[in-house]
Amino acid sequence: MIKEKVDVLVIGAGPAGTVAASIVHQAGYSVKIVEKQTFPRFVIGESLLPRCMEALDEAKFLDAVRAAGFQEKGGAKFEKNGKICDYSFAEAFTPGWTWTWQVPRAEFDKILADTVASMGVPVAYETTVTGIEFLPDHSSVTTVVDASGESSVISARFIIDGSGYGRVIPRLFGLDKPSSLPPRKAMFCHLKDPRRAAADEPNRITIVVHEHGVWIWIIPFSNGNTSVGFVGDPAFFDRMAAGATGGAAGQGAQGADAAGALAENGAAPSPDALMRALIASQPYIASRLEGVDFIWEPRTLQSWSSTTDRFFGDGFVLTGNVTEFLDPVFSSGVTLATVSSQMAAHLVIRTLRGETVDWTKEYTEPMMQGVNTFRTYVNTWYEGVLDTIFFADDQDPLVKSQICSVLAGYVWDLENPYVKNHATALYKLEAIIQFRDTHRKKTAVE
Ligand code: FAD
Image 1 (cartoon, rainbow, N blue to C red):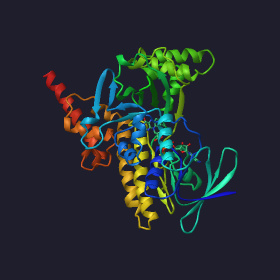
Image 2: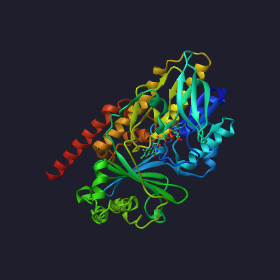
Image 3: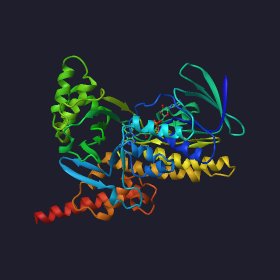
Image 4: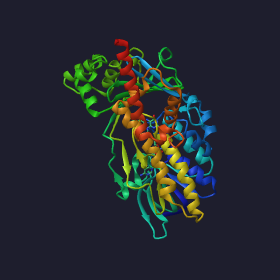
């Protein structure tokens, strides 16, 4: 059996794994990445946030990503029943990057992995971690299996687990915990978007409120294709597939009827037919996307939220999606993945140097500060609180810039009251807007 020895073993070559590997490698330690799949590989999560640019910069990935010519993104636009609320990251309260990219992840992740490999970090593809043993001195012996079924072992002084939805260490050591969020489902595809110019500016993610608890992402890419996804309660998709008109009430029952007609013919609608029915049911995209070509058959994902008991242990740290993934609505995934890896990499370097690290204070607590801020925004989004705020008339520019900062990923800026007091500030703002609107209506009647 082949035996290898490295300072740091990184599991997963996604954004979490590659950012961590690059930073530890730059500090002079030997690093190896093991990755289950071959790249390019599909993964969802295409709209980045400006805050992740700091991590990509420190990992020395920006030049390679810039050279790929991805679509630049300067903000986020929300639409509901014809009303628009636009957030430009240039107006964010927190100083920092004001733009980022929208990326087909297969290409983006391959660029990160190729760049880290070109720096001298070996990336072993089609190599799956199947077992890990931690030794009394906190070093570890990891068993991996390659594409030919051959097993080998890698000894490491430290493991960074960036295995995303694979959740390697939580699964091997029983650390998984159910998420506090209810299960949600997404149906999405990449499509050719020849009529884009007439609708959305490409340098935005557009989020459309479809009905209470159901929303749509529209993420234009620079290659003329666009990513479109519907997200909501799984029952919404069942209703649409069954052709129940109630689900699309007020938004155009056309799509539900189309899916229902297919269902009546004896079979559940195909993913293609259901996606076309969903698109047809939303006036904001129906005519723009009618009859467009799908690049691949629409896919579904469900119940992605997950968390774990702990983010670190003797000889390992979890980064990226393995720690906690909430919900796609504010595009927080890659930002949390890269920032957690950036933070963890520095703590791993200090540990390897023999320094004492307080992992709870220096890693778990700051990460949870960011995750919990996004959690409040996710919850208030599904509760409808953010609808009231986003689509209010006469928005206060300072408040708008503070909320914009969160949407840009600056969830660690405690100078921002909409970060520091996230648990209460949005509810208070909603109450003020509702009071003002009621007062205005009363005054108008009088
Ligand atoms: P990944 O990108 O998943 O990479 C982990 C890697 O580990 C994979 O390549 C995998 O093959 C490898 N691996 C797994 N198991 C093993 C093993 N046993 N051995 C070796 N390797 C292994 N985020 C955004 O920022 N913006 C968005 O717009 C967005 N939209 C989303 C929409 C939906 C519907 C969902 C569900 C998520 C979305 N996300 C979005 C979240 C995003 O997908 C993730 O947060 C992001 O990919 C996390 O990166 P990562 O590096 O942690 O994991």
